[in-house]
Image (cartoon, rainbow, N blue to C red; front, side):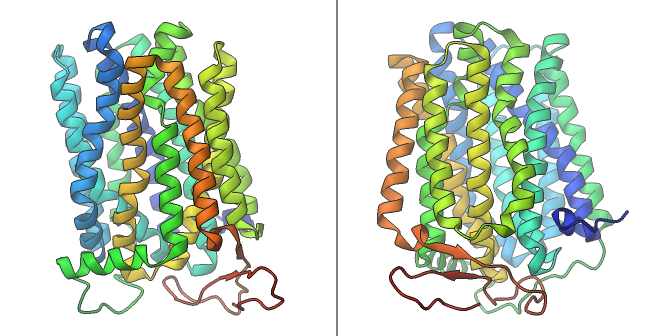
Length: 443
């Protein structure tokens, strides 16, 4: 199979192509389970406790992230990343199987779901740094932005298919079958990992700090918080998703406000991914061509907050769907540029630790935000919670933009083929434009 078109450049590389296809199938199952889990919780609690119970799902997921984020990043930098992913994929399959067994037996209490959701999050905390750190070793540096864009469209496609399929399966059978399908989906990634050939252990020579130790963890923390571009993108991600995370409240909108049932819920849950998938297709073409990456990133997050406000005000299904789709489109632009900046600014031997720290921000933000959204919704109603959250996101964007000029003025240029070297090279492919000066930092 040939992938000569520039928008598919990263798929020319066999190892990346294998993991890309495997993750597409696995992510589809995982997003099915995420949607089904929230629906399952909403069916097991009293109506007056529904908002808090749904918000608690985010809280139980974020605790393992906080506990294991730094350790998982250190492990991803010290261990073989492919073998680590085999372990995490197996663990995730076991959790999904346990959920299926409990659902088939007619679970009547919500606490086992919370326990398994927390366990799944703990396993995922080790999977994510290994997975994201592995990708830059599978493609040459000049194809990395394209690989990130393709990974984004793959993930967003799965995020469309997963919840929509979950809604259909729940409406026609039960949540137990959603968990079952997800358990089998992890086999796709395991197969891809086993079929890979000649995967480099590291693109850079290890140092004395590249072991599982507090010294290694501290080095990762110092790097993240002393690099303004990486630190600011993480803060932007955290505050935006903390305030605008309203996914946990979708069962309330579907059941009580819009009255569209399980099938409508599945489509509403998938709506952000519909917009994200469409935008991902655009970003695959444009990512390497956009030079003003910092300003575009900030405006994208602002659009995310504004669309969330529109979602909170909406009382019709299609307007709600459109607003949610717009949040997904805006988040995709933001996510692509955040990932490109972080991957290109981080040495390979520190990538796992950088991603481990980042997990607290980009996973902790929405999960804590779900708890906050549930609490506010319990006191003031779901629409009020969503609207104020969107406004909070806009305030956060303004604050990050005002306090981080490096991000406001961030520019990028293409790396010419003659300059490109292997993945993990520390030759930067960006330049920062200093206002009111004619000179720029060259590549």
